[in-house]
Image (cartoon, rainbow, N blue to C red; front, side):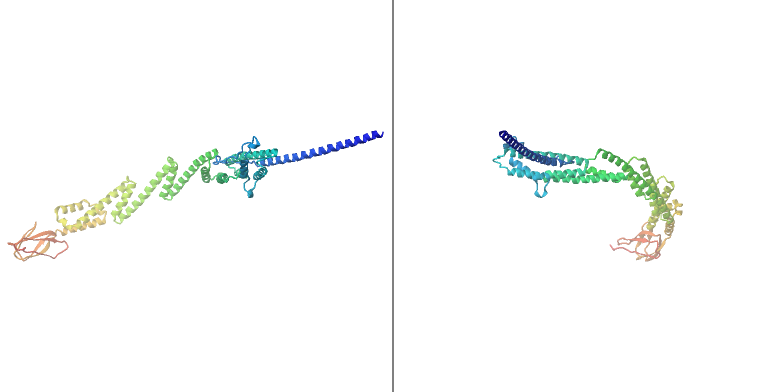
Length: 476
């Protein structure tokens, strides 16, 4: 019985030990599983955080300026892994210490893990392979993200989405420290902001029906970027509408100037309207009206001035004004008659003055006859001009004075026989009174054994005491 009891006790102790061993093994297994689970969760969390940074945005002229991908050949065998290449790649991604991001921190972490490996003898091959796999996976992820960010930048630029562009530009900077590429995209952001600003200005102008500002904004936008199809259509529509608006404004402006008789300003505004629509009948008719009214205004002023000059017996200036009036309206018979009269009077005045200034020519029979005919043929004209009438009277008086001979006191030496060319001879005398009409004469004194003595004498009209001295010439 005791032996049975001992067996039972031993059996119970053995069972207790087995249970203890099982519990211990189970506890170790659970602990190991928790450690593995925590490590897996941590890795998944890191991967998820990396994926969450994959935000979207656009671009334009920079779509062909993507940075070169950082690539690492997949390691078929750990011995094929390029340690130096991987390290240089991670150093580029890790960036500056004072400007850390999530990806730069991960790159720095992987860089430290690589530095911790003994490149010549990786005794822990499983650990080394794990690190190499993480490095390759990380670099591949960076390349994928960079491509996606650049695609997003391109799309955001095309969509004019400044917010998305800024977000993706920030994300791009977080995975790439290629300053040249980043600066180019920053420049693109500046251009995008200008495009957005001008685009909003066009929208605001359209909202208040401000055609001019909307048109200016769309033209500016066209300089900055390619317009959307609806913007192109709107621009064409605006150009047509604004052209019509400007045309109507020019026509209205021209009519206002015409009312104020500001003809040159009216003409300028009409020409601006015709520059927009050269064949518009309204503008052509308005231009003709301006030309007519301007000509009529000049005609009226010229006629008024001419009449005033005629009243003042200033036929010379009257003729100039009548010429101007006749050019404006050549078919006006009244103006043409006045112009012809003014020309006749001015021509008559000139001829009368010419004859009066050269009175001695009137001694010529032909000249005297011409003067008398000039007066006789213009009897009616003298009644139109006081100046012409006065000159006529002066000429008639002059003609009468020329008919009265002047007394000439001829003094000689008593030996010379004196010839007056075309008049006659005077026998030798020492002093003799003769009569001659005003004019020019040639005296010749002739003596035996002496040279002829010639002397030209002018008998003026306005002198009464005239003395002529002549005697024999030089002895031979």
